[in-house]
Length: 147
Image 1 (cartoon, rainbow, N blue to C red):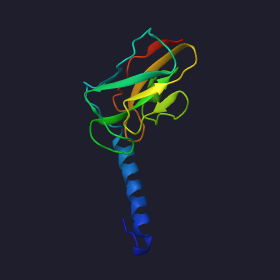
Image 2 (cartoon, one colour):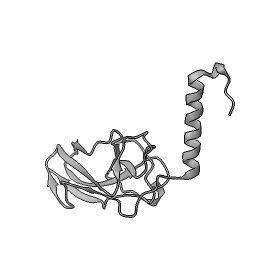
Image 3 (cartoon, one colour):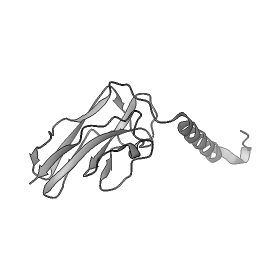
Image 4 (cartoon, rainbow, N blue to C red):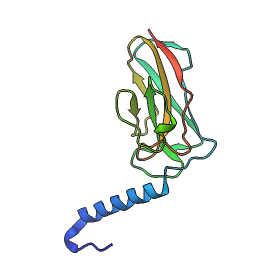
């Protein structure tokens, strides 16, 4: 591609970003090894907790990299609250809302304050663009009760 000298650094950066995005969409989602899985370290299905409570994320078979960093066999955590990952979620960026928490800084734990009652939690590993890795690395959904 030809860039005039007037395009400067901004033009080069913009062009690189377009090529990077094009390359990403052509090649598909971040591939994952078959042995990768995510899990809750400190919470179990059926557990009762007092709000606020700590949630610790575990990952085996891959590494953690912040959002925006494309590195083979890495991703970052997303926490689904009162919603469950479905095949419709594969291949598209994970939403950013009250039911989909992003940990794009590479965080491996958080403190949640949820209202009393029963809640469902699930971990999903996303790539540098918050798209679930392929094949998806998703924890079993767990149910907790908040006092």
